[in-house]
Image (tube, rainbow over the protein chains, first blue to last red):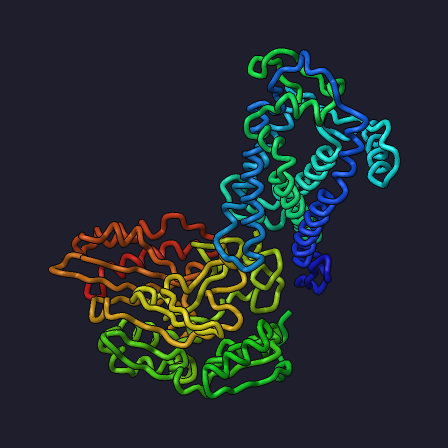
Length: 284
Length: 333
């Protein structure tokens, strides 16, 4: 299996062109393998951990907790679904022609890329000024929690493992991976606009040196194939019955009190007593 | 870089006697196989050592692919019929003089004796960056050397380009699209019939192919329905050398005209885009109109909407406008 594609330029030099499309299949099957692993893990391992957790935690009084707790504001949900639509369009237009489904994909691809870029810019501003910016980021305290959780997974004591704050550790990890892959595809994608016909920039194949263009294509490809795996696993978790309450919250905005108490630590994700509709911005 | 040599790279040569046998070989070798028709495009590639197939399947021995026959008004031309045989066929010349004109102008007599109709419509682009073996988009790379600020792109596309600006050089292709022909394609999975207009694809769809033909496919015949038989045709080719050359631009039109009014028309040009371009907006604009200079002028103006000339091919805009205009006005004007 090759990782990169190389070619000979007119001066006889070997130059990087892009990633090898073997990586597309590798990341696709890695995503499938992860899903299969998780299905087995969830069937065999999780019930045992759940029994242990049931012995040691929960039981907080529901007093003061509203029946519906806003998890995602309307603005945050709109961003999520616009980004999801753009990402799916990018994946379909980017990879279907490679697997043999031919259609005129370039225009749809760059338009979806621009939509994704705008939605991400909006998200960065929105999250920076209107949401609890740090709630989704991996912080030093998360590393300790991660160590405790791994220890528990491996059969060690579950003592001291807190329930989640607003965003569980796996969500933070996923967000970090999406951010890194997103930066790679958006940054390189915007530069690659200079290689295609579009009304936003005048194409200029000589904007960068040949090797730099190759690097752009390779980074774009790497980010994109990573997104194949990330999207597969994301959709898998979104449709899992035990995670569906989270998916519903991304549609309707809120979670039930029972779900909140079962999965979250009220001291780490503090909610007000006001009804969901009239709450302060939920600082998500 | 392409270096013309006397010897081609070694390959396995297959000379099947039937389409089924040829399809079997193509199946066996997949993308490493090359279908050889008249050889006029293929030998260049091989001698330049740019294309190095493992197997070459010569269709010259399959008699059934050479026949030209008529049934129920439709003329079916075997893909291996030579250009000369197409020109001299009485059914083709009596009903579809458009194709005869285009075929005669495609090449010199010597080449028409050797070249086939299937080879002519399936030929690859003549972009010299690509044919010289440069690692451009069409060759699997990530750049179009013809669309750079210093490129020599006098012969390249003004329409329909998407990253690659190479043009389709066929003269018979626009005539077949204008005649609403159908391409019969076979592979080991069976047969499919594709309208000529959909047979040619641009780089937006697949930057490495000019037609829908995939490895394992053979174009077996071309069917021309009677729809446009005997109507008013127009073909004109503009080229650098009058004796013989690839087109800078060509135009083919088929028009149904009653009492000087255009009832229906199909206008197609090649050499200006990576595929034969049909000007449906221009057709719509002139349908129902009287044949006149004004009508023709309007069609020409509509045809050049959306053109994007490169550094050295701006002349093609005026050329295309005038060719379309003349194709509407007709040869009599």
